[in-house]
Image 1: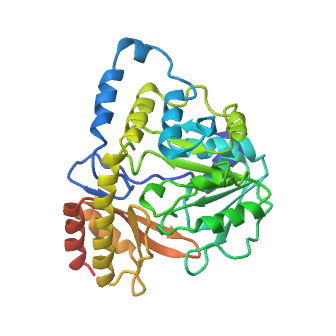
Image 2: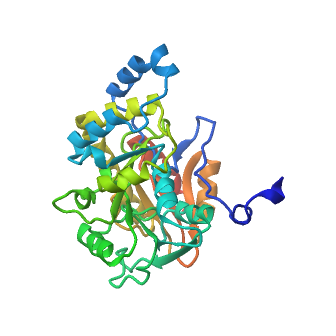
Length: 351
């Protein structure tokens, strides 16, 4: 049957997620989960949802209750909110809707590797634009004709951000939509949601968010997009009918409501991030200023893959990433203080 697969699928390499070990002995700092548990309200809500009627029936296909909560908490139009099975589902829906076969998807580089996979699946071309030396976008954007442009903000793997005004200027230059992929925006000082609102709207901007990082819900798979309500009405035609289940909708709605709890976790994570950054810099790593819950660590004096391999032998997982034209590095999640201490202790003997 392999010969009947689409040629584009046979030719692509596919996105490789971060390793998920089954052995609980590992210190897991490779996929940017929040090291702290979800809000207690999430567990209460899930217990209430575990009834026969809730589980035997289909979920709300558009997530009305969640969208209303997002409107209240985030100050956005509920009709401009699209729900997804994680933000990767959102990115897939947008790609399906806007990019024709043979079309063009563009992203800065180095950035999220899934964007290339989405282009491959759509039978589209994929081109990259290198970040400037300070991790900002180049002043003159060279590929304004793209059907879709992705900008991860904060960016992965660097953790750096592009200012809202620069994103607005880019959106005005582009012929097609600009997707601002804000998986880590809750850890940053600013975000692009204002660009989707009537008083500051850039009509071509779609903001994508996830509950996998800040909200400690990577295991339930939930994400959403915010855009012009007219755009969301079109995207609803493209998504799977019931792409979010009862439990993910319940968990996400309860988490979004408990902002005080997550703000307290944010304070802890940012404090640990600052301490980790200073300690890693003293060990000789070059680290851009991160606005995410991870740091991007590179060396000028040696390759870093041996460090990744040695840490894994010592039951510490970090993410090794190598970008053509940009070199390699270690993307290290900000864990608990105890996990950060363990990492730093091991690295002292390795570098």
